[in-house]
Length: 101
Image 1: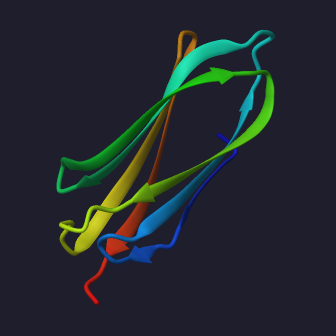
Image 2: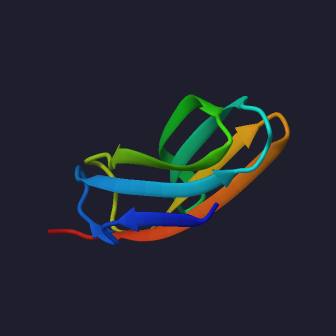
């Protein structure tokens, strides 16, 4: 992973985060896998997205729009991104905060 960005760093319940991952895939052939994104608060998963993906040699950017549930309480949260394929596993984390209006 060359870059992992998350915007905004402070958000209200019901709003949307934008996660952008830039990665280089250096294998000679493509590989099927998954990308899993989980929003975690106090060790509990608040919401999760999972997508099948074909990792192709080269440098790529993936952008995801993640809606925070309206019931989410205030405090510090973690966005955990896992990129998985047969020959590899990558793990990135970003922190953000949910605030009240």
